[in-house]
Length: 186
Image 1 (cartoon, rainbow, N blue to C red):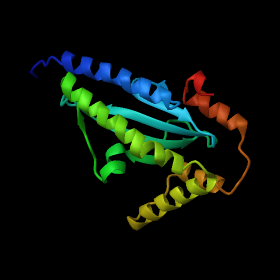
Image 2: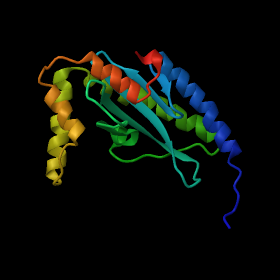
Image 3: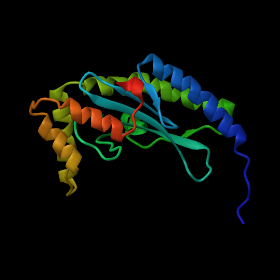
């Protein structure tokens, strides 16, 4: 039988700090999506996605993920087409932050908010044109080919759409519906 751990202090610390993070992201134009995710739609009809991922084995640690997801490419599920873990953007390695108690959670969430401001928001801004998205996808393609892989079918469709074909508003509406995105995103 596995021992029973009282996670309530950590869970309370996480929830308290997540509210502060939510207010910070709301100032940046993001809305809450699902439990630990935040999204905003940019002028290119691309979803800018950010989430917190708790470690599932009770370590009271979390990592942060980010992605760009084109709304104008049909999706049947939430696909992280361009993105990674926040730690990779900051320092080139995976980072897990502690939220075991109020003090640790406060420091961790403060570090995450600073990383969003300094690294993630500029990363999103740098990929806010057709040309910059095309270059990011081509870079991803080269990286994957180096290891014998290829772009996903969705990424390939996205790259092809960067040729300047008109955006289909019906596809965007359907993608918003399929992904169950909040109404205040539109």
